[in-house]
Amino acid sequence: MTAVFANDERRFESVLVVDDSSVQRAHGVRLCREMGIATVHEASNGSEALALLEALDPAPALLIIDLEMPTMDGPELLAQLQQRRIDIPIVVASSRERALIQSVSHMGSVLGLRILDTVQKPLTASVLAAAVAKRIQKRPAQLEAPQALPIDQDALREGLDRGELCVHYQPQIEIRTGVVRGVEALVRWQHPTLGLVSPDRFIPLAEQSGLVHELTLQVLNQTLLQAVVWSAENLDLTVAVNISPLLLDRAELVQEIASLQRSYGVAAERIILEVTESSLLRDPAVALGVLTRLRLRGFGLSLDDYGTGFSSMQQLARIPFTELKIDRSFVRGVHERDSQRVILRSAVEMASELGLVTVAEGVESRAELGVLEECGCTLVQGWLFAKAMPPTELTQWLRSR
Image (cartoon, rainbow, N blue to C red; front, top):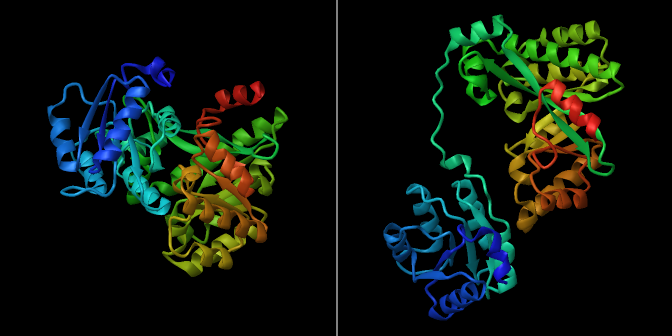
């Protein structure tokens, strides 16, 4: 078992086992030492663990944490780790029911902690080795200091006027065949001094300042033009474009999108318009009218971020969607959470009964892909396959496949 750590000795030279049971703690310590870990620390509860973490230098490379402990239990310890910005990979081990352990794991992930695995006791060498093999190399975004936003409405207005907004495309792949069926258009801002700016840093500003309409039309223009280029290269891909909730209040949006579609000669069936559930709550009657008219003209409609709201199924009954996009929060770690797998399977089966294509976003591991394939999901996108890329880079990527 020592070989598990042979390529990563620096990262796993020490472990802290936190468990109030002296028997279980001794068992965990013995397993770690049998796996070749030279230094194994012990704590009988969360308070002792925190005191040790403050004193140890260097810090342990791995934490094995029990849930039920006096003074400070496992969930409280996880919260304290997040508050103190202690970034150490964690294995949660408990004798409690699997659903409870998975809930605690989900809590840790939401906090931005690196939960490698959740296991039911008794802990075994093979289980521990498998958990360690899942170690995450990238520091979670939740623990990074937030970036400043040194841009304002005037800067965004100038960026739009100068044509600095560009579109990257992330492939959507059919699970059954491995064929790339389409792409999602994702806007970026090529700022002259800040470099490539992600949409979460300027889309809210665009919506607040009334610039989101022009921004969306620019994205549609670039995307449809690129679709024409791809068609000339015998790459007939569907293109998915996000529509801001604010735009569904505009009855004229239907004519604007249809005019662009006709001017570029791209079949409406190749254009998927993605809307979130929040889009449908501002003025339901107007939004329903806009979406119905777009669907009548042949455009595909995708309910984006499915599962993040409370009335998604009601919206599916009211609006003629053609596609259901499953939010990454349901995809991430689905192979490790039984309840999450059940919900995902139910969503895919429901979509199938309604005749909808299902698209899972944020797929990052083969294990997640395996569950999606078992559930019968149609399309997937995520870093497991490819990041969002500029058009020329995507074309090269497609050719390489």
